[in-house]
Length: 269
Image (cartoon, rainbow, N blue to C red; front, side, top):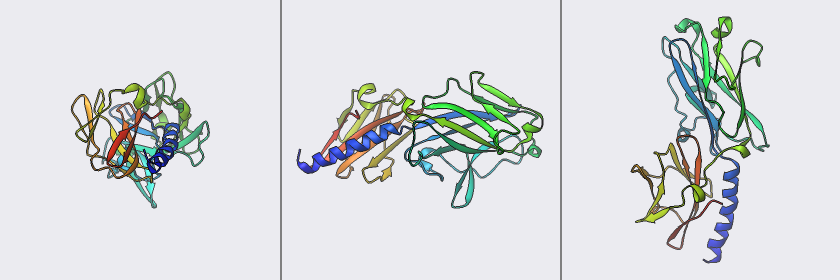
């Protein structure tokens, strides 16, 4: 391997370490009344922005339906606020061992035909990397406060059930997050006919290819029930990071080097 390729490998090693220190972390929960429940998802990702990130599943919805219960996150981009069932935020500029991220939750007004109760439910234990979750009114818990704990559900009644806007505070410690390493969990990697074959138990939630310059794209991958097929023939020269997000939110990282008309896939540790 020539010096140019070696320097790229060393640079990419630093990028890989940074990716491992900032894993993708997801939290799913439900908000509803007596008649209907809406599933919402929030989290953090090193590739996210404070605006809409379509590649992370943040799709705008036109608004609350004309009647019945509905809930969604508020995401503001260039002073325009959209509703979305998913809100993934970036890591803080200088992440500490533990930090908190706030998400804005909006539910339909009472006159839209909502029931008399406001019900929150979630899985417990919480996902690794998440220490606690607290939902409050916009006054910081003066009127309503729900803590995601072992009881797995909580209900607001009376006037508190008529509130329309909430803050969801999620306390993260990323070093405790569970992420799957490509070298240990999926050792049987293969490159056949210009394709990277990755054995996976289910279809992935997302696949993202990132270059050292930060440019991202979704490769034209396919899944045959056993292997993820990811084409490598169109890779530009240099190092890339292939991130595979599983349905449970876990991430697998695959450093890929394309140099001197050859392609190499490295272990991420």
